[in-house]
Image (cartoon, rainbow, N blue to C red; front, side, top):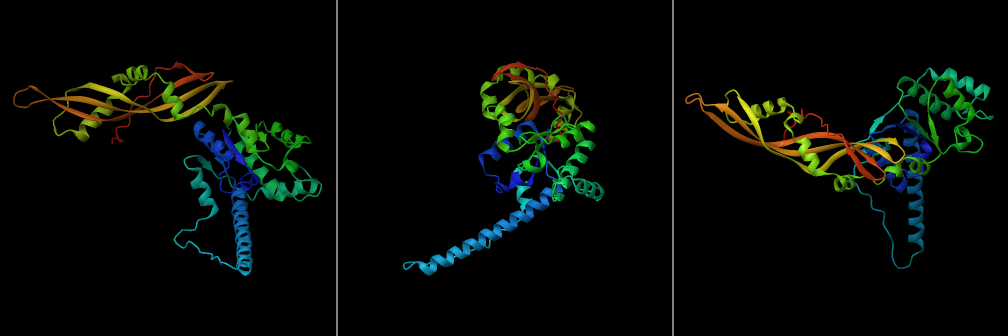
Length: 340
């Protein structure tokens, strides 16, 4: 899934602290969605944020001055925190969104001819007044972007129902929808984060790391994940080469013990059907291995035991809020270069 938020969605909560934004960001992390932030949106956001902050600062300074002129008991001082490093809104936004997949589609000079045409002919998102240059630029950026790299689900969220929505202010305007259909493109339209969350995010709100941990059959997972066949042989060879105190060639190895941490490291959710989800889970554990080499003098085997971490991943299916199946097929551990 790839999602584009219009400037007006961010502008309602510049700090992204609302409950709607928290639910939305959590959902994107769960499904490994891509958040697309077009260049026009970033540039507009930075300008509007700085303008809003300057206005609030000016209003605050005036209010503070009026207070000090009125109060007979005390005066207040404005103390600036000089130690706090100033950052741009773009830096804040990307840092706040954290580990999400983010891309920044740029607008192109080639759009100008099409924008002029739309402005003259009053083609959506232009209105009869022909003043929606910025909206046309955003729309062409979205169109061009999904043409180049199609996703199963493309989402556009904008509160600008006047220029993007139909008369009922719920769905995409028929002219814009026709344009999508003519280009065989799919784009779902929402007018708010709350509406999007109700359709998508809240359905999997119950799927958290804690919920998964509590509902997994860890005995079953341990039996499958820790089988030698589910841990690639190169893992053991590399482990021996890096950790062994011996320099002789390895003859063979045996797994003495292996167990999972019984805590999901990460997970990714994919909807199969209504109330039915496939969840890829990432697991870590500890493995204890005996390595055997031949003594050059006696020809007897010398053993050395090495313990280290390993990771694997598998899939489960959740239906009606119950774990109903396990794939019992685990990703082969090949992270030989990622030892702790």
